[in-house]
Amino acid sequence: MSQKINPETILSKGVSEVIIKEDLEKKLKSGKKLRIKLGIDPSGANLHIGHMVVIKKLREFQMAGHQIILLFGNFTGQIGDPSDKLNARKPKTQKELGKNAEKYLEQVKKILDIKNIEVAWNADWLKKLSFSDIIKLAQTFTVHQMLERDMYQERIKKKHPIYMHEFLYPLMQGYDSVALKADVELGGTDQTFNLLAGREIQRAYNQEPQNVLTVPLLIGTDGKDKMGKSLDNYIGVNEKPKEIYGKTMSIADNLVIDYFKLATDISLEDIKKIKKSLKEGENPRNLKMRLAREIVTIYHNKKSAQEAEQEFIEIFSKKGKPEDVQLTKLKKTKWKITDLLAETQLVDSKGEARRTIQGGGVKIDDSKISSINEEVDITKERLIQVGKRKFLRVISK
Image (tube, rainbow, N blue to C red):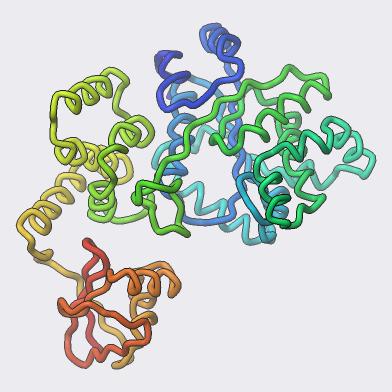
């Protein structure tokens, strides 16, 4: 998969910070095959395009011929990364983490050549550490350094508990870099402290400190918060082309350039042209249509992108409905609306169903549903609409 790729592209496109940039640039130009690490605690199974920002950066390193390491935290994931959290995370079992990791790999292969990556599991070395090993590791940082972190300061203000085991998380992530002899570690900007911990701990274990490259956190479709499933402001990697296309069209105009930088394969030169066209009065809607095509093509293909665009134009420009709405037959005749939405997978959970109904986003036969307790009789065919883009016909068997 190795091919010529400009080091400047690797170090600048969609990048927040590189530590130390001059050093990493020199290594990239030297031709040395570097070990590039990304640590993942697979706490969830379904990825969105915000998760894929760092994966796309990994692909650039892979295309340049470097060794990609996907490290799954089947040990650290049982503790949970406290980064950017006002409360301690709930622990996961190794079985849960393993299943999520399998699904993770299925999704990232849309971007990475997973046949040529190194997959590692940090339980392989972390569970073998003795108590004296852990004390030695703990000596690399002070309590003061830990407490300086913003999220701990917030917890102190709000009188939320800080648990001792949370201080161990960055130490274990740093030790992962020692075990893997990482040359470079990637992560989001919320991971900066943990990535820098890796440099300190490698020094303590007489290794050359890894370089660090961070990428921005993608703002979600609500235009306010970072993309996440809990906020329902995400574009899922495994969603259907029309869903990805429609959600992309819904982003705020001021996010168009960021999405081109972080979520597409558009070159830096093309992005400059897009910026210029916006300044000269180009309608952001036209650029969003190109953006939506680019994103659908990455996770599906060009044909699917064209079909999704045509359907979008048909439904939203001409205010119609899809011509071919899937029909699903169900055993029961009467359904509580939240159960019906979850059963037909129009939403991921009953919680999401409640939020969508309360936000006015659910219709049955063009009538808006206002109560989460409403019952729906499907002895005759009914048309369900969720949001602007999801349609489904249902009837009892």
